[in-house]
Amino acid sequence: MFGLGGNGRNGKHATAGNGHVIELAGITKRYNTGPVEVEALRGIDLTIKTGEMVAIVGPSGSGKSTLMNIIGCLDTASGGSYRLRGEEVAGLSIDRLADIRNRRIGFVFQNFNLLPQLTAFENVEMPLLFAGRSSRDRQQRVDELLAQVGLDDRKLHRPTELSGGQMQRVAIARALACSPDIILADEPTGNLDSAAGRDIISMFEQLWQGGHTLVLITHDPAIAARTHRVIRIEDGRIVEDSSPVRPPVAASPRVDSPTP
Ligand SMILES: Nc1ncnc2c1ncn2[C@@H]1O[C@H](COP(=O)(O)OP(=O)(O)OP(=O)(O)O)[C@@H](O)[C@H]1O
Ligand SMILES: [Mg+2]
Image 1: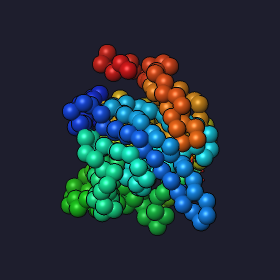
Image 2: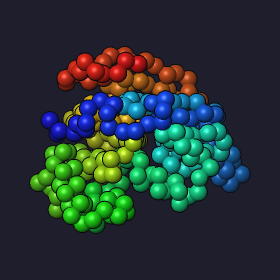
Image 3: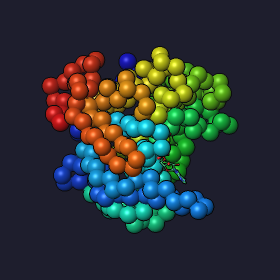
Image 4: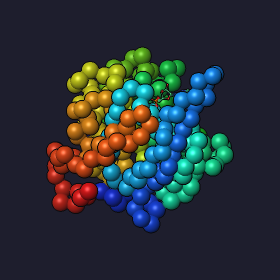
């Protein structure tokens, strides 16, 4: 539908020698806000391979967003090891983390996080500007991405002139701009009605088919059921890590789909 395919399953991105793009070992996170100390993560061990589509589920306050912020290099852990594509990132400086984040991670948020004063085109262009890409390169890439998410006729629209589903598509195009190793989405359908939500999930499935690695945080069981691995977090710990409940992509089964 939207032509979000990449170069085919598992062919798109480099990984560590063992095929793991994310390797977390003993990750802890403590927040010290005023007199209260919160232990948001209490020892997370988790590996995710290139080309996986993973849902992270769990009750409110269980640590899902905290975990996503650490995986996305938006925040650092209090303890433990985090290897991203084989490189230890746990002890890196803020600047270095920002650099890794810009190049390797695409984010999609519940509230879209688009810059309101910029057009759809300019929002998608932003990470390419930060990456120092030439004007011609940027033009070509943004055109390609907006066409991929079905919004080539909305380039000059600002976020307030778009529907929620369209805003989230712009955010997905922006997340893809620098060809990230992982796409992280925190409740990507949380502010959408069910039809727009389904549309966004189809888009993620197409990205997965194109070889992308996706980690989706969700409260929605319907979304979790469409991924091929569900990780449940409770009280800062992984309490369940499931195998597939059904083949992840209904639209066009492929003979080369990975087995768990
Ligand atoms: N910046 C912060 N400072 C202090 N405590 C925090 C901070 N961020 C999160 N927490 C606490 O850490 C715990 C985990 O929060 P987190 O946001 O990761 O939960 P969540 O699973 O994403 O919840 P939700 O489903 O409601 O989004 C909560 O108890 C929360 O109050
Ligand atoms: Mg959260």
